[in-house]
Image (cartoon, rainbow, N blue to C red; front, side, top):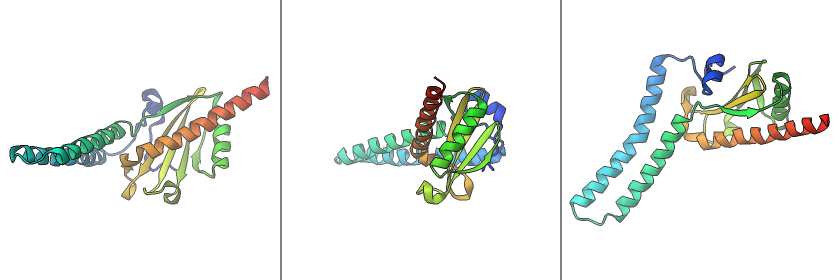
Length: 189
């Protein structure tokens, strides 16, 4: 079962995971994300301006400011793309479902829920590394699949801090899925 309740039809239309969560939960999550994305640049800007006003060497504070702004920009990017779905062309809904099951079996991925609309793959915290688990959501839309992978933090809240590792999992699925489609098409010919 999904850790986040998902509205499947709205998600397919929007090509983003549309969640059914309380407004207060969303406000708390985005407040925390905003705090992380803005607090460190604020501190770096204050340090830089302090060094400028005191006529102290600014090279270290400037480098720190550039580093912090870069990291904060990546964090904002990952927050914006946290719920985005990647569309991958497939064959048919039934064949796509079969291919996903084979890929999950080959990679020892745990399918926690599956039907003709959605497949949920859970990765344990041991497989995921530094987070409290990952969940890959696969939605079936006619001939295509839409894929998202989310890491979870403490208390099962979605975490934007592992977005690049999640993207890697999606790319693994994409490459294997496209290879399996090529094999199926070659067998037909």
